[in-house]
Length: 268
Image 1 (cartoon, rainbow, N blue to C red):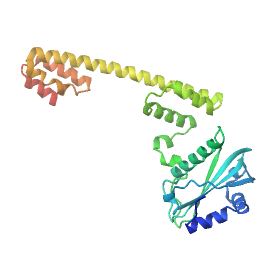
Image 2: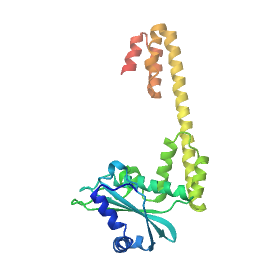
Image 3: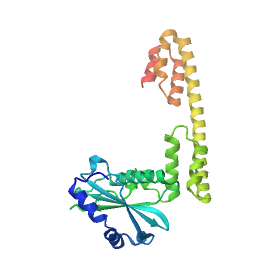
Image 4: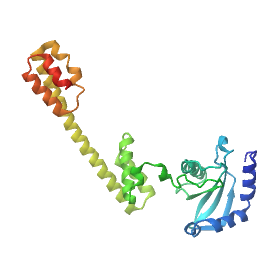
């Protein structure tokens, strides 16, 4: 472990590296439902730190290995030296948990262990930062009332943002991490979202086909009626996506005697 120059960090690690102190604290202050699944008599102190060098003035951390539900897991203790709660603490913890999992994978294999983060805050202000990562997400996800509604939103996000993502590519990830029953529900939902996307693509294709047909007809009419002067309007008309508006322009060309008459329809 690197030398400790921060006095807060030195005191924190001196106290919390004492197994009896840490065990007593956990037994006293952890929520009852969390304490019920942790076997504090298995607590082991790890020497790994996950705080970036430029943040060690503000944070200290300790990692404990412990049995959680009779499986090896971790408790991650983060001490906040600042006098106010940083808004992004939940996101910061996610980064540290990812680091713990990466360390685990260097020494073992899947499944990943449970990591329970604990933040010690001693500022004067009341803690007002989000307690959960979901508090940093948009309302679309937060307002979902069921787990499946939440998962559906995440799947829609994946299919709309990850280029080339297919249901077949998603399947092994789901099968590896979920039970057959839950995995089957998610795959059914994923296929439904995919099919909706295909249908939307068909509808978009039909719309684009109608638009293209109207543009080709307009260009032909402009050339027949007004020659080169009429064709100068094609680039402007080509930017119009509204098929109803294109139809009005096409009908106007049929009855117009001058290019200016068509221009008036385009610009109004």
